[in-house]
Every structure is written in C-alpha cells, then in structure tokens.
Image (tube, rainbow, N blue to C red; front, top):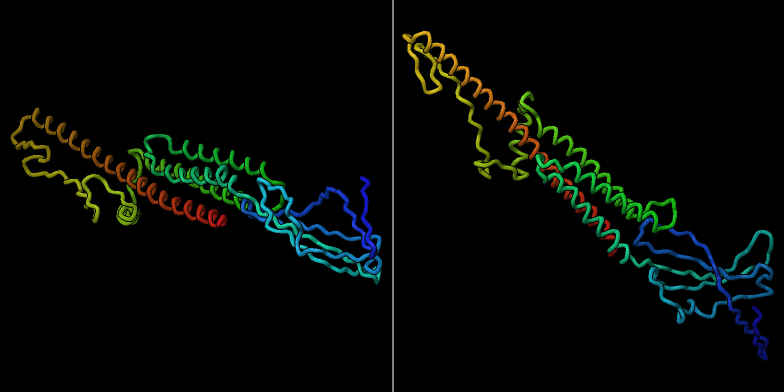
Length: 320
C-alpha cells in the first residue's frame, strides 16, 4: 500500500506505514494452563548500517492504547530496548529495536472445564476401597474413572500446541491415571483375599498381629461387639470332653450300660458335633480373611486420599 510521507524543514521524515506484522516465537507449555509466554519482535535494517541509518525507540515500551483485549491471553507489558549488533563480516554497527511482548494465559476456562472435573473424578478413586466387596462394583468403578480421565487427557492434548514439553496439567492427569490403575490392581488383589473359600489356609500370625490388631485400630475397623480402644481376644472353641462313661459336649450323657442302638446314636451325635465344630472353624477362618481384606481396604483408602489431596494442592498452588 502506497502511503504519503511528511517531511519537515529540519530533515525529519515521518512515514506512517500501515502493516500487519506476523512473528513466530517458541511457546513453552510446561506450566499449562498457568503459563506465561514472551515473544520478541526485532525491528532493524539489513540494507543500511548504523552510520547510514540510526534507529531509536521513542518510548520505553510499546503504545498499547489501541490494543484489543483477548479472551485467552492477557498482555502484561511490551518493553522496548535498543541494541547495537556487530557482525563478523562488517565493522559497521547495526542498531535495532527489540520489543518483548509478555503474555499471561487466562487460566479460568481451563480450571473450570478441565482441572476441577479431574480433581473431582480423582477423589472417586479412593472411594472404591470403601465400596463393599460383595457389591461387585469395585473394579468397574476404577475402570470407569480411568476411562473418564482418558477422555479429559485427550481434550487437553487437543487444546494446546504440539510441544516436546509435558504440560503441568498433563503430568497431573498421568499421575492420577497411574494412581487409579494402581488402586484398581490393589482392589483386585483385595477381592481375592476377601473371597477366600473354606479351603484357604489360616491367617498367618504376623498378619493377625500386624493387620487385625495394629492396622485395624489405626484405620478404625472394628467388628460388632469389639471395643474401640482394644479389640476383644478371640475365644477358642472348647474341645470335646470325653469321660470314662461316654462323651459330653452335646448336652447328652451315655453310660457304659447303653445298648447298641444308643451307642450308634451317640456316634451319630458326635459326628454331627464334629461337623458343626469344623464348620465353625471354617467360618471363623473365612471371617478373618474378610476382616484382613476390609482393613487393607481402609488402609489404602486413606493412603490414596492423602495422595490425591497433595497432588491437587500442588496443582492448585501453581494458580496462585
């Protein structure tokens, strides 16, 4: 576009040339969406050196009076600096004026649409440990939360430019997804412990002392009838008492003068009592494994709650 120039009597020439300047700068998205960018615009002459054409900045910063506000970026300033560059090919100086455009991203859109939903979803992962194992929804809850975070991760990847640096919100998503994957794997392991059948081995002594006594008190896991301060010791099943005149344990006493029918009846009652005693022992062993699984559920629930809280606090502190 051809424009007029204004020439004054002292030789100064004012040339107002309308132009749209496009520039490219390196974008660092390490702290996305709380990042700040700096773009430099350098104005100088390649044809004339500093002895032929001298360039000075009239103001210390660019005039932003006619700047149109942007919904995504906030302009913090645009300072100007005059530089004199000496190249190896020539002894003459080449002056230029460099404007540094300082931009700050408006993070409210990303906080309310991507960050807060992710924090709310991540708090559902520890609640999977609180869900009863008999409900059958513990693993499906973890998988559903993992799929939801995957969708948000794809939205973040689409909303930012390609870069070799992993953004802050992306690191938060990856850490949360890793935590949910670990919680789902631990849930499967705990469900296997909960559903130990009658043929399972008894709970080891170290597990009874560590998990059923100490960890149960720390995680506030108590059965009905137990004291909150100290758990009641288990009462062993009384062994059957055999005497000279017969067997006592079922409320029936048979003397040595019993007939053959009475002896057969006594053997049948003793067999039923032994079966009932074995059934009680099996139920007690199964109940111990279920309590071990419940204590581990509560323990991992508090551990993952603390992890989610500190990760959310870390990502929110970047916004302040």
